[in-house]
Length: 237
Image 1 (tube, one colour):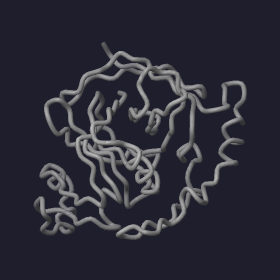
Image 2 (cartoon, helix red, strand yellow):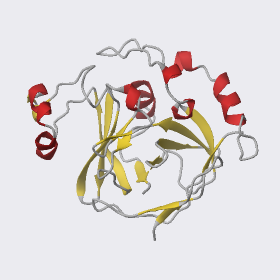
Image 3 (cartoon, one colour):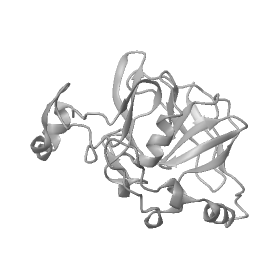
């Protein structure tokens, strides 16, 4: 059965997900809604966001191997900043649900809640949907682009050096995978897709990647430490 979600409180049409890379659908309804907001109370979300301490959430992070600079959260649509929302679906706590159309990633929490993060997703022609699981997690990972990506964008070749996994980019502040990465596998093996940080936080809320899901480094680190290997990931169509 196809995976579906009901409309968000602030609007949006229901969509269905089909399996890609061997990932199957679940048929479960995955409704989320902005906490305290409704279609007849359009200012509720803004009031809630105004109370959040984003200066602390997105401050420079000390104690990392490489710099994680403060994120200029004032420059982006506040919809894409980390926040708690209501959840009335059946997925258990710990499940990650990605809605590429809305550019959101949700981590289901206990108590009928979810943590919502703004994300950058695959540009047209590079999206995917279905179910997977977090097979591996890496701190300041190396990035080894697939041959097809290098062929599409030859400028990448100039960035590549020898790494433990082949020609790629060493972990660090300028690495495209950012501070953390989680590697998604289906029952058939590596999907090739990742949930990861980014060296380009200004791209959050856009369709820009080659299919991976990117978060601001502060959000990715927050999600990473709350997500064990084996966690279920559902990507909507």
